[in-house]
Amino acid sequence: MKILGLFIPRMYGALYQSKFDWQYATKNNGIKQQAFRNGEVPWPRGKMLGGSSSINAMFYVRGRDSDFQSWSDAGNPSWSPKNVNKYFKKAENFEDMELNKDPEIYKTYGQEGPLVVNSFNSTYREITQKVIDSWDYIGIKQVPDINAAKYRGYGLCGTSRVTARNGQRESTYRAYLNKAKNRLNLKIVTNAFVTKILVNDDAKVNGVEVDINGKQNRYLVKFDVILSAGAINTPQLLMLSGIGPKEHLLSKNISCIVDLPGVGKNLQDHTSLYIPIYGDQPALEDTAKQRFEVAKYLYDKTGYLASGPITDVHAFFSRSGNMTYPEFQSHFVLLWKNSSNIRQLFYTFEDDVVDSFTRHNSNQALYLCFFNILHPCSRGKIYLNTSNSHDHPIIEDNYFDDYRDVQASVDGIKILTKLVSTPYFKSINASIPRIYFPPCNQYEFLSDLYWKCYSMQLTGTIYHPVGTAKMGPDPKDSVVDNYLKVHGVNGLRVIDASVMPYITSGNTNAPTIMIGEMGSDMIKAEYLP
Image (cartoon, rainbow, N blue to C red; front, side):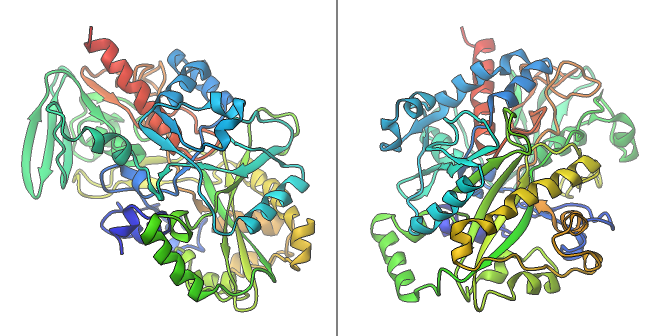
């Protein structure tokens, strides 16, 4: 079952909390997020070739030009919107032939890259289109393609592009590594755990120390070590290797070779809060049809299993009508009446909270909207628990540490919940149920105080951590420079989501792949004629 989840879009949830997942969780702060089991928010990360691109929901969202302008303005001139878009196109092989008929969409995407970008063929498009129409009705205007559209007004909505090919996941392993695995200058080693980057007293990187099936190995390098371990493992590995905040390293009995205070800081994430909407339609799922859908997928890789459990309906919106970027995003999941797997969706919460979310499903369908804050003001951090590389680091997400995020959450929820007053949702007698959780029960339902409490206690992650090895010119608060070289270290680059100085306006898989493309060209420009 779990192996199938590596390839079949519908089944990736089976990978969570398995051997293919690092199984990280945030630190319980004792005050917020207490609706989660043990006060900890699980942070699944891909522990396999392709990393989290092998475990994610496959949505391909580039972000907005303003995101990358902010990167450039922060002292990273190579990362301008013009240059970034060149590298998005370098990666892309856009295969939606219908959308390619639109000249604006065609010129947006690359056509000859290694990464297939396409669209899901939903088996219940009639319902998802009604949800899109509902967003459009409240002023979040429908567009044919989210990446190609200019952001204007109060927002936009539509179906997202995805990294999928022929009904299967298009991870970075499948798009890049698998195609290159027979090259003479590439050796892929699996079941390998890097425990340390070898840095001498002159801050020159000589190689890496690796645990392979329990045996310690050392691999020396002629030129550079490239660290692409992600926003959690990258800062952990830097600190274990003596690169990071000096006082913290010394407290773990690690000699500090390069004092870089920014390592592990600047942690940003897109928060996710479930907003449940119940309605009378659709009715019970047809189990016979489901069995047919399985056979259909086995036959030609189409049908129900060929798209993910989270629908491809996305909305991006703001509180103001004159913004150039969205403040919020929404995904949604549809669960039919009396759905057999509804409790699995809420597995991260305490049992009484799960009961509250699911109690109406025996009689009504659930339209579960995920509400995401795209540009939180709060910043978290990652630091070492011990000097043992096999011990998970401590993750302090610090969601809502900045009160501006609390108010933004309330304002954004009040926009999203306007959906229940649209013609389609009225036609199915839609309503928002109260979710019972003791700290919030004292507040009037749907009031600002209720939504503030609800936000602070039930907000989790949409799995987009970035920023913990921030790119910037000043080693006092950043970790890598414009060319992704670690400040103060010779022969070490970081190329992954941790270098983002600011999080992008949407799902982070596409920008991370773009970083890989530009980073590889930076290496080639330095070492090849």
